[in-house]
Length: 82
Length: 451
Image 1 (tube, helix red, strand yellow):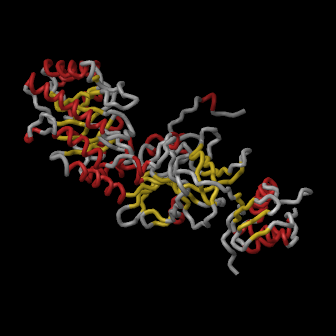
Image 2 (cartoon, rainbow over the protein chains, first blue to last red; image 1 turned 90 degrees about the horizontal axis):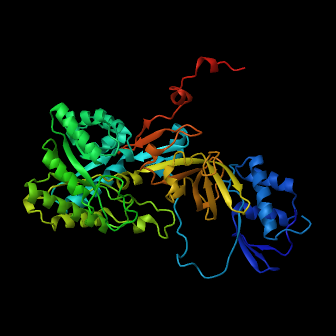
Image 3 (cartoon, chains in turn purple, orange; image 1 turned 30 degrees about the vertical axis):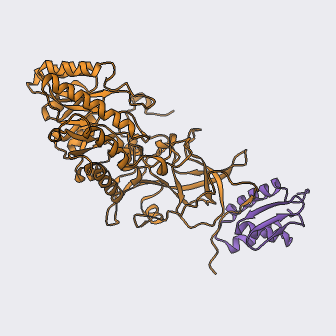
């Protein structure tokens, strides 16, 4: 899973896609995931890091991550090959 | 190192444009405590889902309602509507505050007697009273509100048989300008049925005519309808005075006051738009005071309002079982309390708040209950923060009708807890068990053994 390289995200969770002019708001866990994606981390690494930082079960987070990726895809924030 | 609080990842597209005419949504603070008791602790001790009732709110609401009427009318009596919530603890709070009992079945009548209510202060309403129940109510001197002519004749028979004069009123239905008009209960005013019934009672000489009763409908959102009802009953009372020189002891205006809940399809919240006790009291009291009654002859004004007195005192605490996304992309959350416990979800948009601290991120969510039935929807759309499994939500204004109309359907009914005025919790109805539900079942001999 790769995020489009031009996507910009602020510390407060404001996300901007210059290609479409659309903007989004992301909650802290969402912002953390997007930052990890921008740094090039893999799916498994994201799960490792988030479950290490936050009080969430691995299975539970994996389900949420899957759904989050689906919404990102719907908003065309991911690279097409994903 | 302690891990950070997890909130499931969420992204929402910002839509540019003009704000809607409703303005920006208002934030609702989490309900972490009810009457000083932590929601999480209540769930830990009594389980989830959980009905919670606040004694403090019941008493303060009753006092507010009583004050609204007693400051405007000299002689006021409330009668607690058992069908609204007949848990004995709840009934007894109202009785302690001074309310009589208003019952609509033999079961409710027995319950009121068991609660220690003076039989002379029990109003027996309803269309389905049996001969045995009428005999019992007559012998005990309760107030019987006659619903139809067959009951009137039956009571005359009962009077002859028991050699007692049943204390009666008639229930009057009428056009008060509201729709739908309730005409299935009692005798119609406009067509002359009510006057006819009153004549029959007076001419029989077997019944003691105590008063007049009406119950114009439910969740009446205009106080004016009550003024019309009171005026029409006062006219009947005057006719009785003129023809029979009979002075009625009371006028019972029934119930039907709207609570602060919001009806489905309403544009504005019920807490902003539904009439207050003061508005109802002003309409009813003014109509009676401005009628022909001379100051010393004003009859007792009886009120049987139930919903508006207890709705606000009830909460359901429910836990999140799962989150899922529907095919439309809408978020759905499954709760452990559904329409089996929250019957009123069929007509109210119940206020739902979360029971734990949350961030500012929110999403439109559909709240479903745990039943394997398509109708089991608690809220079709509610803007809620991200909820995790085992988080709690608090459903507000559930005190009326839910613990009477709830269903033992698919799952067992939970504990009901009352928080007293000192902040102590008491279980006032224990959760059901398999034994308590199946205890009355009888399986024929040939069906006991499985293959």
